[in-house]
Image (cartoon, rainbow, N blue to C red):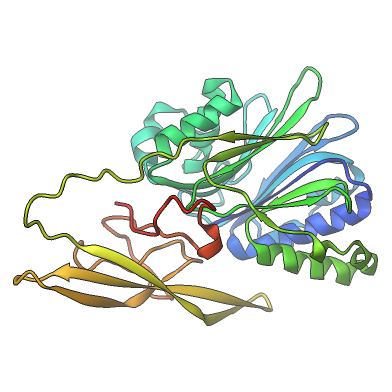
Length: 371
């Protein structure tokens, strides 16, 4: 699990915008403490500035490489707080953003590509991160929309991803921002053009709310902007949002949802295992860095066939924790489980929506395991 942020548009008040972006990045640390990075395009000179380091966001935001953004009138920015999975954070090639050789295209990714081992041999990678492969796919297509569609074609049925991409045309400085995701990873959007002159993108509602509180503590004048009154929208899955950083026009490209799981004809008298989920209330608190975090948990009930053909409900005593990104274990397939404190490798990876509002708004996908 990682966290991503983004902004598009030249700020009305650059000082207030920088303070708010800083706290948006710092609050994103809760989703990934192992490394942080950013990529920004200046709105005046069209120059690109980027940096990444194996530091948590609350330390990273004190570096001069981040603070120099306050001197820019940025028209597009993406940031990332990494929770390491594939590839250690001390090899900076594994950290985000991943940037093309020409330096004009950058990508940040939250999620896991489960077919990474199968496809990585087709690309030359600098590190061990599965996220770098997504950038290589887009570069190979030489067209951002077609590259993103290829990502959906390859991994839409077997990966978790929410991604931001920024492209600056080296000839004229024209800059475009892209956001896309599948149902397995969250994405949020706020139109703050009337307040700060910008669009904002981020992973969780709580990150937005907490960033506002921290920004007001640093600069009380931000309270007058009433950022809390702005609606937070869920970015639909299987939809590419393309934002022109000059005109602020948003173009939405629909993607056909891939078949999530092959359904084979049921043989006569064949018994199958059903999986249903029920969501408990917010039952646990974790304290870290002085912040109390309420963590929702999910309980899974298995209905398995018996020798007599009757179905007996079996309830796994373990839970799914959205902060771990791991699903419950299936006692009938040998999967291991996250028990709230640790986890072990599993034979198969279970997948859940992370919380109720991460579902596709059209609710076209069921909340089940995907093998």
